[in-house]
Image 1 (tube, rainbow, N blue to C red):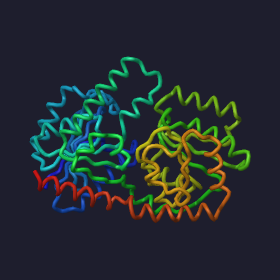
Image 2: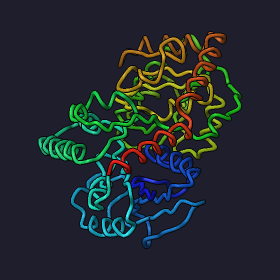
Image 3: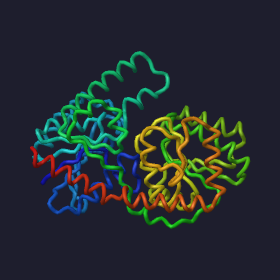
Length: 383
């Protein structure tokens, strides 16, 4: 069975940019072991001198150049759709698996004539509505994009959701028979992290933008440091909003937190593994999330998680067992839970062990690949 998986795929596995790339890459690596699958990956890149097709350990990867920035989602009417669709039709896939409801990939899949499955990695319309300074133009754009996303869901032969929360956000899915829940896989190396815990180390992993609400975490740190003076927050992630980053720096200076907060910027996979090994707890303070890969990574590394209880996160963390869930934007509660985890060694270690057990059962690449393979078989046989 030939399957074309279309989505953002890392140019260098050592520098995986974001959760979607991580999910796609690690699932593809696990699918290599299914000998009856001929897997092709189709990904769009903006910084290529020309189109490239390479074989990477049995997986054929087609990297296609594109005129738009790689992260740009304004690709709905690109003239390159014809070129991409022509390549896809030439491959004659039995199934197309398109990643990203708000990206170009589902449209290219539909043009192939093969059954097309769509993976929804986030609730894009909710994330768009959290953007600051929404003009009438942006609201109109949001309406157009949401309408198109709903049409894509209806047209698809099946939908992968990474968290049950997504089903609740899209009423269109209520009438969809083929819905496959496949949770985000975590690379095997995270299960092999050797703990080198530094007391008081708190880790945040994610892009620096308003949706992640790192300012809330900094405000909690100001409280935490009064009781745990050696507490140190490491922030690992790319800057998506320079304006927001400047706001964070101003707050750090205002509250004298410079000695308790360190921005790491973009880190390699090995550096991130080291950060998980050194931390006592992963902290997230987002306003909206679907199923953050970083939670699965922390749990695989045997670390508890303290997070705001938003979006699909309550489906991932068991309150008081693998971590703590905090009502959104409650600074005092977030700080209190972090203090509790940092100062109670027995609690922290018990939560870490429980988190690892959950990760073993739910977040391995093999588990994701098995569910994905079963979905391919089901849809291909029904076609």
